[in-house]
Length: 189
Image (cartoon, rainbow, N blue to C red):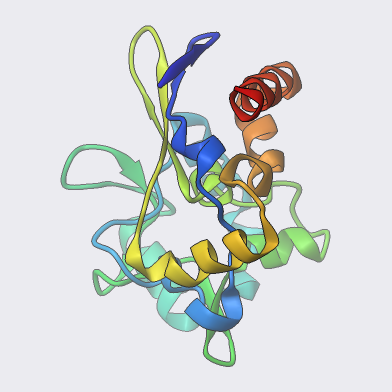
């Protein structure tokens, strides 16, 4: 672990390798697990605002879940998250054949909304836990991502490079440049 500004960062994000392999996992992270995607307070407002524009991209089951539960929910632990369909799929998930994709991201890709998706989804496999004085930045190892780890190793792409855009979105360009310096120092040592 090392400190970077107001973050405590796991060296795993520099040392582990990862590249999503949708052809292998079929987007399992959007349909497996026991909770929706983590959200921050600002994202709950964004979801409320963009829902009418995203709705046409969603499945009827997702629309029903959102209209019954809301565009976001408080999970069992009190954290903010996306609603689920029958405690399984994220309500915003859509399918391309058997592959789960994000309906919000589809609307973004088509220029309908200017918000890509929750930052927690964009950052995965990095998870950020905010505390009063700092944020913990950790690598989340999940067996459904074994193929992503293999592909990352094959392509020699460390986690932090795979999620560069999301890290900059969350922490800013300067933070990311400092992270790259730490990665280089670690590599040279």
